[in-house]
Image 1 (tube, rainbow, N blue to C red):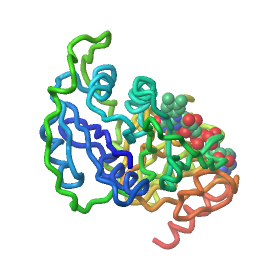
Image 2: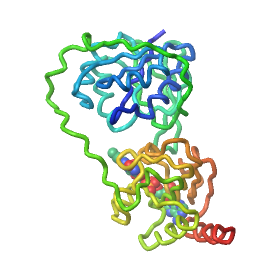
Image 3: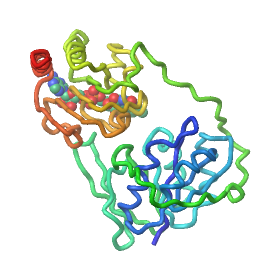
Image 4: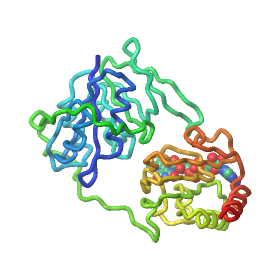
Length: 318
Ligand SMILES: Cc1cc2nc3c(=O)[nH]c(=O)nc-3n(C[C@H](O)[C@H](O)[C@H](O)COP(=O)(O)OP(=O)(O)OC[C@H]3O[C@@H](n4cnc5c(N)ncnc54)[C@H](O)[C@@H]3O)c2cc1C
């Protein structure tokens, strides 16, 4: 049976949320698997995730987060035929395809779910065409596989069962000093007049709003429910709202209790910014919009008609 590894990303000394999602993904591949976390450049994160993994492999380097260096280290330490799970975020997308080439292993991007291993094939579920089609991929793992797992696709396992030890693999990682890329600094995203990362209720608007003037109905609803307005990227690209309100992989990561997606299709880049499993309400005039696959409540309606009505009802109830 192939060994399963999870690459644990981190920021400011804290493990990324994906650390507790990848253990669940690994158990979906093989419920009996012993899962090893790989942590580069942080002792604190090694200790933080040790309770959730059977073992933690630590690589000490100050080159974090340089994908070129990390790829080199992983090629040197990973046993043949490993299955390596990496979050499908910007850094994971940088690291993973090249890693699979170097390992001569299979590569699957943006996995949503797994159906285990059958006859030497890893069964992966993905989405195509912006989520309109679900595909079942059968992946030959004779040489192992590198799999990018969509953030949020698995509910994090908060239980701390495994309790693994930390093993220092720095010596096996090879010479990591020679690189063509250099990590300079982390530049934090700008924070606007509202910090949507702190909001409990987000009223999020997408391209379905059609016109900047229509944003007024979104502001009215946000005011009525005591929430803040956030948006998808096309709204920022059109300069209708400031970048600090964009949710997604190239925007803010938010953790509200309630997330209302109005005229948003549900691209993985947008959904990747929504963490903490909020109560998700989606309103979209297309019944086949991908967001309905993950929404707790879905309303097939024109937001230009539905939102003012909802605001009125909320105001009445208050
Ligand atoms: C590298 C990269 C990074 C990205 N980062 C982000 C990111 O951080 N955040 C992000 O959001 N996107 C990001 N994107 C863009 C992403 O791929 C999608 O294009 C974007 O999320 C789509 O936004 P949307 O859902 O508002 O628009 P669309 O996909 O166009 O969807 C609009 C939806 O509105 C519905 N609709 C239309 N009119 C109405 C109406 N009157 N009433 C109700 N529903 C209606 C339609 O049915 C449709 O489902 C990124 C893309 C790339 C390549």
